[in-house]
Length: 349
Ligand SMILES: Cc1cc2nc3c(=O)[nH]c(=O)nc-3n(C[C@H](O)[C@H](O)[C@H](O)COP(=O)(O)O)c2cc1C
Image 1 (tube, protein in one colour):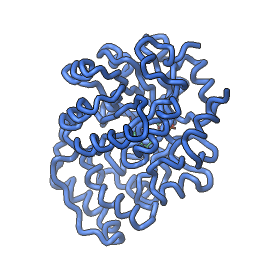
Image 2 (spheres, protein in one colour; image 1 turned 30 degrees about the vertical axis):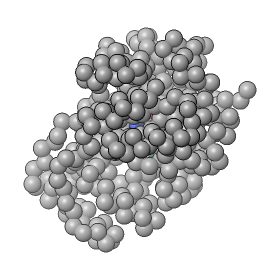
Image 3 (cartoon, rainbow, N blue to C red; image 1 turned 90 degrees about the vertical axis):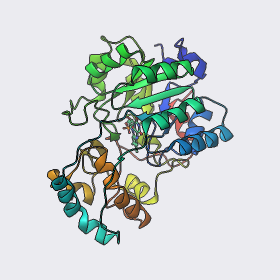
C-alpha cells in the first residue's frame, strides 16, 4: 500500500516511517520530543497553540539545535471572540471559587484577549519556515494558505467528519488528519458549539476514503504496530499518534499527569470543563464536578484562559485533580523510554 512516504509532495520530508508524532500543546510536545521524532525519521510536531511568537521562534531554534530533519508546527485556527455576559462570568467564578481557595490562588479574573494573537503566531511560523504547517478547528483563510504556500510549507488540516474533510480538500490542503472519537486532546470539530459526530477513526476513514483524494492521516487510539497496519490497510497513508508518546523520556508531560497515565486502567471521556471545547482526557475531580455545572462553563477560548491558573497551580502542587489529563481511549501500558525506541517497536523491520 502506498503511504505518504512515496507521495510526490511529501517525499521531500525524507520520512522513513508514515508516522506523525502528534502536536501536543500545553507541554507534552517539548523541543526534545519533536527533535527525537524527526531524528528517528518520523515527523515531529510542535504544538504551538498556546505559545507567543517569541516562544515559537525559541522552540524551533531548540529543535534545530538537535536535528536538521523536517518537522511540523501546529496552531489552532482563531475563533470569533465570544461575548461573555456578566452573569455567565459570575456563575463561572462561583463554580471555581472553592478550587482557587484550595490551591491558595487569588480570586478569578477574566479579560480579553482570551487567546494568543493568531496572526502574530502565524508570522512567527513563516519566519521559522518549518517543512509542514498543521492546524485544527477549521479552515485556514485563503490569505494564510497563500502565505504558507509561498513559504514552501506543506499544509495539513484536521477533520472529524467526512464533510469537514471535503471542505479542507476544497480549500487546498496537502493532507488531512482524520481525528476519530478515540483521540486524546481537543476534538477538532470546526464549529466550537457543534454536536460531536462521535465517529470513531475506522468509520471516519471508511466514510472519507471514497470522497477525498488527498492523503489521509489516521488519528485516535492508535497504540501498536498492529493498529498502524490496520489503519494503513484501511486506506490511511500515515498515522498520527499522541497518547502513546506522552510518557516517553523526551515528552514534557508533568509529573502528576505522567502518574495518572501510568496508573491502572485509564478511564477517559470528553468534557468542556477545562477549555469550553470538547476534549478527551482521563476523568478527574475537576471534570466530574464541573460537568455537573454545565451552565458555569464559558465558551472556548474564554474558559481555557479562565481555568489556566487552576491547572498551573494544580501541577505545581503535584496534584492531578484539576489538571487537563488529555489522553485517548487506547489501552495498554505506555512506553517510558526514548521516543526512538517506541518508533522502532511500532515499525519492526
Ligand atoms: C496531550 C495532547 C495534546 C494535544 N494537543 C493538540 C494540539 O495542540 N493540536 C492538535 O492538532 N492536536 C492535538 N492533540 C490531538 C492529536 O493531534 C491527535 O489527534 C491525538 O493525539 C490522536 O489520538 P491518540 O491520543 O489516541 O493517539 C493533542 C492530543 C493530546 C493527547
